[in-house]
Every structure is written in structure tokens, then in C-alpha cells.
Length: 256
Length: 182
Image 1 (tube, rainbow over the protein chains, first blue to last red):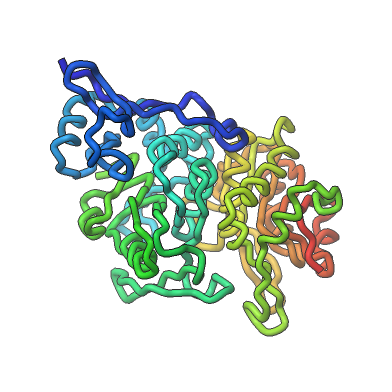
Image 2 (image 1 turned 45 degrees about the vertical axis):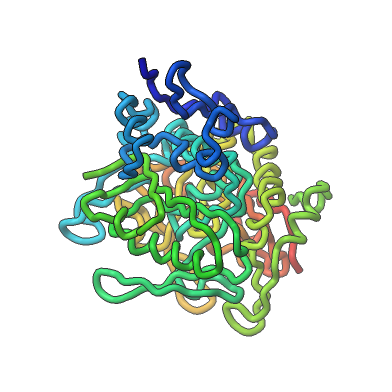
């Protein structure tokens, strides 16, 4: 009998994570035929699935579109979303006709007013990325600056702000990207990241994926491996996930 | 008050990670760049810890962060002390109903906004930004919070430029900084 997949939730609150070095609990993620779950890096796991292949080792909290057999099995056996998700979803405010008529704006500022929900949001990302050798968390201005730093601090990574033009004071590299009408530019400081760094890109929301894919290109140009993009919210109808190419996307809430 | 003056041993490490970029955004200005601090996980953590140690257990229910670099330091502090985080933003960024506070720049004016309903009367608030210069922005932030009946307990910044006398502009409100830059 296949046992249920679960995400091992850390019992340590953010406060402990930030101030005390602790050994994270082992995330039991791999189904073993007869005995239940085994740790991702244990010798019982086939060698090719150990270490940096964590993407298959982590069960997606939502349907992530990954079509490996292992993930499909894990999704099939996962009967419920993490209980923290529905609360997070319920405190996001939807504002019609902002910034222009017809758009339903997903406002995360109300999430930030709910202390437990904000903490749960960060915890969900930290649980996924801790112990995975992520050296960089890149946050996209400005709402990526709210979620990125707490994650970076908890997993021991650098935080790198990706900014609109003319905000960063030092030497920058730029990447242009398309908007609905016209183009915009995203910048990063030269020297903030090194070739070989493993990075996450954080933003509050992914819509068309234009901004995220510009961030991916910026980082890849300097030899960084973008492990995953992580957002609180996805608007799946805008197909942003497809625009990210090979880079996986992880989200907490999907708003169709 | 400043941790700089208290000579906490972590201060030296924090100060050494702040990069000074001359002539940005215009000639003659020595820009205090905190992005290099964010590249050092220990120094960044120490920065947050110094604020958390000061404010934890003081019944602070709101941390208001000023766009955009206040968004980097404010949320980790808020999470750690169990307070809400409220972003204070440039015009037209916040999607809901807002209240606005105008303030004077060297040339011209600017405006800071906060969502209606984010903060309630009687709440105890901190205002966080990376740096205080003339104090104009912090002053506008404090006004926004006081207009909705909150009590601004203190303003907290990583860096102060004391020669610009921002501290005096805060209407007697206390200011706490980690690093002074002359």
C-alpha cells in the first residue's frame, strides 16, 4: 500500500530559524515500495536521484506541470494541499480594475497584515529550499524584496535585488524585456553573483512570465544556474510557466 | 541613539560591508550602497538581529517599511517580532484605497502612500528604511501613521548621515541607527 505523501513541516518558527543554527528535519520524500518514505540523500536512494536532483525529490505542493513519473505518483498520492495554503489564499485581496479596467489585481499587502499567514508563506518556501545548496536569492523589485530576504536569511543565501533602471548605484548589467506596450529593463549589480552560483528567483506573482524570464536571462548570462522560480501567486491562464522554458516554477496559490 | 555608539561588536562587520559609490545619483553625492551588505549572509543577519533584539517584546504591532529598500529590512524584522508589515509606497503603486502624505524634496515634491485600513488607531509602529538623510521621507512616513491614530515608537535605519540633521526633523521621535556615515 502506497503511503501518503506529505511535506514535513518544520516545527521551528521563523524566530528559531533566524537566530539559532539548527539541523533541519529530514524531508522524507521518496516512496519506497515496502517501507514507506526514505530521506532524499540516503544511500537507499538511487545515486542519480541524490544530491542536486532535488527537483524530483520534492513533492510539489501544487500541480507543477512536471511530468516525471515520480512526481505524478506523488501528486496522485497527495490528497490535500498543505493546510496553510488555503489560509494564505484567503487573505490575498483581489482588486478589480487596477491598474486598468478589466484587470483583477492580486494584492498581497493584506497577506502581510496577517502575521501567521505571512510567516507560513515564508516557511513554505524555506522548507522547500533549505539544505539544497542555494547560494543566491534574487528578488524582483519591489514586491520580490518583501518575500526574498526572509527566505534568503533562513536558508543562508545572499540576497540580490533585481531593479528597474537607474536605481542601483554601481556598475550594472541590464536585460530588456517586452511589456504589453513597449519594453522595460531589469538591472543587477556586476559582481553580485558568481558563475556557478545556484539561484532562486522570487517575486510575488507570475503573470505572463516576462519579468521572470528576463531575470533568468540576466543570471544565466553570468553563469548562474537558476534552480527554480518561486512566486506566491500564479495566473495560469497567462501561461507564464511556459515562458520560463526549462526553469521550473513553484507557486503556493493558483488564481484562475 | 545608535548601535554604532554602543559599539556592539557586530557593527564593525556591518559597516565594512556597506559600499560607498561616489557621484550617485549625481556629482558630489557619496551613495551608501547596502546591496553589498545583503551579499554577506552573516552581516545581513546581524543587521536584522540588532533591530530584533531592540524591538522584540515591546508590543510593536506594525513595522512600516519605506519603498523600496525599507522592504528589504522591514519584513524580516516584522516576522521576527510578530508584527504586521505595511509597505509605504510611491504614488499609484498600491492598488486599494490609500491615504497620501506629500513631502518636499531638494527640487520639487514627492508623495508617500499607505493603504487605508492597514493600520488601526492605537497601534504601536516602527518605521524602517535603509538610510536617513534629511529626514523628509521618514517624516512623511511618521505623519501617515499618526494620521490614522498609530503611535510611532521609533524610526529605525541601518545608516544615518548625521551632517544632514535628519534626526532633528523627526519632531522629537526617537531614531535608532546602526551605522553613522560622515
